[in-house]
Length: 618
Ligand SMILES: Nc1nc2c(ncn2[C@@H]2O[C@H](COP(=O)(O)OP(=O)(O)OP(=O)(O)O)[C@@H](O)[C@H]2O)c(=O)[nH]1
Image (cartoon, rainbow, N blue to C red; front, side, top):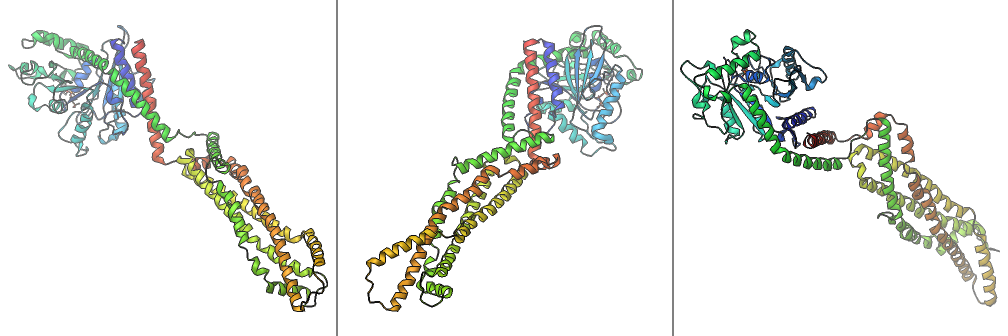
């Protein structure tokens, strides 16, 4: 297990990491707080109760701002590090790393300046702590948090609510079960009226973590003493009260050295007729040592809980970060890479739909298997090849004279007119496949997990894919219509030759002298033309039912698989970082949350390393 000193040092380092990453007491962050799990000692007291004096005498240095009104307006996390005897004293601020202060009046000025930096000159208060580390052979390892003095009234320029604001800030620290409370009360005031005790009693009714400190023992009226309090008769606490004698205002004005003041305090107790018997348990030096030991033992006791909290939080944060998706890279190259990765994921899903790995693609084959043949069957060939129409067309093309040979032009016109009808089902197939593909794009975008975070990219991807599909549809339309036109531009002559052969064979079996009227002959003639043309059209229909799907698959489905995003890729590879950034625009709340989670995760991991190091190597 770690040595005592190293444990406080470890907590100090974790506390500093907490502040650097925005986790400090009084914050109203929705994330779980490590800071709150760390044991600390908060100093509370009414105005002028002697808080600053106690802190300074624990440190053995003058370094806190003084003045009228509320001087402490931000929490001051004071971390004391004991150094080897004979080494020099210096101070460091977390917000000014690498700057060592050896002149403590400059430390005071920096505390003032840093307070103003956050609160402005407005005398407002802020919960963002200032971290000050003091390295000295004259201190014990200890961390104390100095909080604004509890006050009753606002002074000039301060908001009316200042008293409440201070109280709620102080409360946010001392209410935490891991916070030891150093409650400072002046001996020359009735203990029943002490602000510090009042608050401590509220947040720690059993007094398990409250330490009563009585200042200004030397200022009590002659002939009176504070033994009733110190010996626990007027107000009993778990821990014995510690009496203190700080420098008086006159001492401060005379610049009485802190070391001299410590000595004088020791002498005061040793020679005091009232407190002599308690001398070894009084004074600021004793207080510091006692607190240091206690803080160590509290930390030691809490380590298993802290480790459990850290491990649990790391798991939770990692889970949440996985859900939120990892942050997007900043440079354009990496953004492009991210976008292309997502496009590929989308394309993969889209292809799976078409190849039958996912449902949806089969609807395309439904178009070819049912819709197209059905539409062709419904074409009004009957009407077009009705006896009446055949007569009309043939007569108009070849004249009313009886035809010596087959009415060539009439045949051609009738065939042309019939072939023309195939254009409708051909176009309908192209459009139907187009709609299926469009729907699959929509579905595939929705199914691409990676894209969920990026609504802008989704929109642009859909637009790009749809415009490619439009283009493919255009090409497909041209092809299928061309197939129909091709049928019209050159007829299968063999079909008619074969018919002719069959006719001549047939006529040999029919008696030449059958008694038919001219009228009947004409009818048969036209019916024959109609049935010849119908036969031809059936043959063409069989060809087209096979050829149209080939053209559609070639122009639309195959192209969609091969080149759906080609244009998008060309565009995107020429895009500037700004446009890429816009595509990767996320919901700002989500981005903020991810940032917070990532920061917290970093903190917990750092803390885990610190604890590992302290526990195993301390
Ligand atoms: N004689 C004597 N004077 C003391 C003692 N403690 C504090 N004082 C004086 O009381 C005054 C207030 O002391 P501070 O230490 O500034 O008190 P504080 O609680 O920090 O005050 P604020 O920060 O203004 O709230 C100063 O003039 C100190 O010199 C003490 O034990 N004895």
